[in-house]
Image (cartoon, rainbow, N blue to C red; front, top):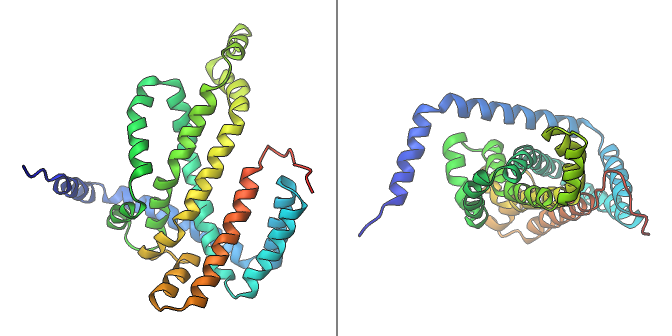
Length: 277
């Protein structure tokens, strides 16, 4: 028996390409303009202003050690001549993380409210998390071509599941007693969600934000294979040309960005700063 699942998948993708091209073009144009605008603003901004801003953000959410690390490590990236690539990667991660959360958190809320939706989406999320990330690049390139847009789309798909799962988990762990209290006060379902459930689920949702950002960053090098610019492209060039120094410097910059974003997003408590030294 020869079951040609791949053939039917190709037919399905070709059907989408033939009938939904305007839809994909509009998505591509929107994401491209959004990324170019964000990237232009950050590149026009003097590097020292960006470094100080991110340092203050790290100090506000974490502690003095992490803020000092942020300041001097970003100066190191600038000194290595990788600032433009660093900003391009930063924008890719932030934009992909932003869209992952904008889509994932509402879906997580929906899954916590509807058991039928949860049963349908759970296998889909399992599929999304276990599928090798390289596979996402194929349809992304077919739908959106080469460049930053397919890189963002594939990164969003790869990074979205933690936001959905951890949002759903946080909402499901809200004590039933609190929900009963809200009902006794006559809260509508929306008021109950806004005033009780979401505040109680905040730690889990923030953990989902952290994981989505980290997964977005893990796609940087992979996305460079379909034309995404940034540090991943530098790493890929270092591998292809066997230039160890180029690859090491770009890889070190990726690690620096990962540590900074992990510490900031991992310690977010809506402004409740940790006072460890």
